[in-house]
Amino acid sequence: MAILNLAGGVDTPPPAPSALQDARIEAVIARMKAAYRRPSNGGPNHSSDRDPHAYAEYGFSIHPDQGELIYLLCRSLRAKRVVEFATSIGLSTLYFAAAMRDNGGGKVIGSEIVPEKIAVARHNLVEAGLSDYVEIREGDARETLRDLGGDVDFALIDGWPLGEGPSLALQVMRLIAPQMQGGAIALNDNAEPDYLAWIRDPANGFRSMSLPMKGGTELSVRTQVDPA
Ligand SMILES: C[S@@+](CC[C@H](N)C(=O)[O-])C[C@H]1O[C@@H](n2cnc3c(N)ncnc32)[C@H](O)[C@@H]1O
Image 1 (cartoon, rainbow, N blue to C red):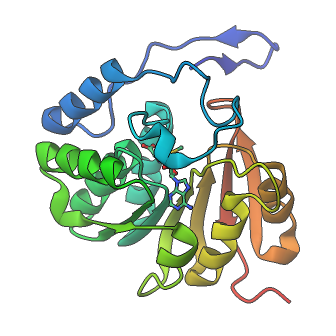
Image 2 (cartoon, helix red, strand yellow):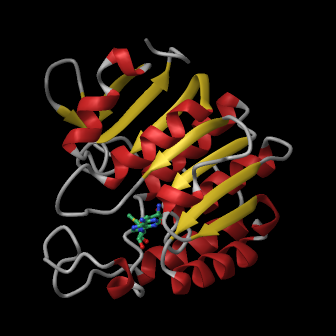
């Protein structure tokens, strides 16, 4: 990743080895990365076809740098319960599950509406030796994530475009936010404008910044548990 230096130039440090330090998980991630491809219509952000079931063969996964960040933040928080919207074929899930294992135990609550993707995600988790740490809830996340069974330490909001009305990212975040204690972290991948407006308004109980990763990754910390 390029980094701005104090003189306004750009430095490119040598890539860091994966923080996971686990050859078995890293091999699954490398295989998923090599298999990554985009649909010929450009995907739901570039086509009028936004039915998630029409893209059952495509992962639309986070960038591995975002996964490394998720892993390190979850380690720092000593996270024990985390949630992701959504799971797809499970790349983000692998980083979360590795952090749960390395934190001495914990639970990843995944969500996905396309059953074929859940099957692939489960296969990937078995191959990585991490399935014991993950529960994937099948169906519309606006229903399946209503009750997370306790407060979550970290929420990934990596959603899907609807085309009209409030974004799925915002709808799901509004369900999850009351299930986050002060200090919990939210990470958003797609910079949906209504999500950004909501999470950046301190009245909603978060402080937030945009990271220069994958075209803008919003990192937010829960600061206020019951905003007025
Ligand atoms: C960007 S992908 C998630 C990628 C995943 N976080 C990763 O890094 O591998 C978004 C996923 O949301 C799923 N999805 C779309 N609408 C959904 C809904 N209402 N409820 C649950 N999942 C949904 C899609 O099928 C798609 O797999």
